[in-house]
Image (cartoon, rainbow, N blue to C red; front, side):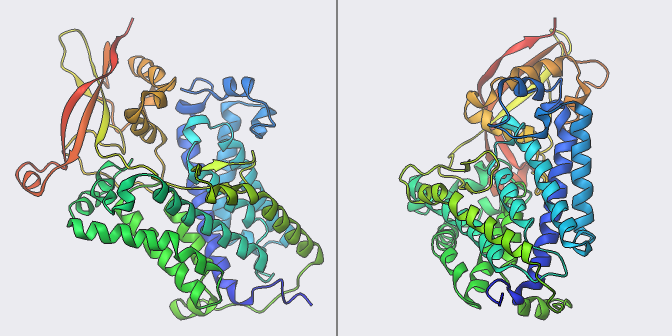
Amino acid sequence: MLDWFVAEEYWLGRQVFQRALAALYLVAFLVARNQFRPLLGSDGLLPIPAFLRRVPFRRAPSLFHWRYSDGLFEAVCWVGAGLAALTLVGVTERLPLPATMLVWLAMWALYLSVVNVGQRWYSFGWESLLLEVGFLAVFLGDAATAPPLLVLLALRWVLFRLELGAGLIKLRGDRCWRDLTCLDYHHETQPMPGPFSWHFHRLPRPLHRVEVAANHVTQLVVPFGLFLPQPVSGVCAGIMVVTQLWLVVSGNFSWLNWLAVALGLSVLPDAFWEWATPLTAPAAGALPLWWVVLVVAVTLLVVALSVRPALNLVSPGQRMNASFDPLHLVNTYGAFGSVTKERYEIVLAGRAGPDGPWREYEFKGKPGDPRRRPPQLAPYHLRLDWLMWFAALSPSYASPWFDRLVQRLLAGDRAVLRLLRDDPFPDEPPTEIRALLYRYRFTTRAERRETGDWWHREPVGDFARPVRRR
């Protein structure tokens, strides 16, 4: 009687998706734990207590409205990471169905509590994406229940909006997407280049045109195939997975690409997994009626909440990475509606005394020393490094945390310094700090052979006035 409800051919796809999502939850909670004190803690650059005093619960639901302390925030991160680790190794799926759902719900609620007080540090599209997908995962079932077709279709709906939203914002945005020239710049000017970005940037320009054209097909045409029967839907998902892995190799975009890969893998049928791996699908289990009713109710909720995101897709004023509800249940996505043609970087430097040499602060991810090759970071997310890239584009992104950052460096704040690659003043903090703006570009092949540098840079001017320690 419930044949319409189950998707028997997706046991293994569901399992792979759940393990991948658990891994990304684990990364997200560890990132939050490692960086929250200097960024959001009681003495952070954007303190959570000050945020809670001016923003009510209804606008930003979070358990921290009930009580906040740095210790509680750290406990939330460790509990979330622990639940994610247990889920990653398969413990959660072997629990009774209500307990499995409770674990997934707890991870979602804990991370929602973090995101909703994260302010500018958590204003990235992949935060909402993780929450939207994480909420749907609550209703995917455990190892003893057949995969629910409605939830699998809801996951495809997320992937559809993620890809199509990114494609449409490009067509409506920068002209270089329409004349196929954006990748002449993007690999060099993207927020956080990776170890192979220099090589991607130096590919022949005709190949860049092919890359852009293939991207348009993947984001504007292929998503519609997700809702067709197999093998078409699986082939379309496979194309998306390959494209996302190409993006993983060419740059660092936190867990955005990896979460898109996980969504794509959920579309592949068991026949693929049994061919490609030693895994085999189990026999069908019982379907509790209460669970069926709950899944149907959640599906109807998703349909209702999808109206505004769907209208946003067809709107000429399309918004990127916007949430239409404070729980981030159904969101709109998009990336790089405009592409910067030149790369600017803020370089912080300090000196100990009026006649001392200027020593630069090196960040873990963003370009600084021209000799340093861009590192591989994703799916890890360096929030300060990303905001420094945005601040170089517009000083409005630097308010009010940048001035506080400079003051903490002058004070030798150990928590803030741990966000950086190293401390050029290990013995005593500097007495003065300056912030200069530089124009960066990748070196040519000849320059690379001659100097060994990955970047060439030239000063543009002051980003902020020098500040002296009182």
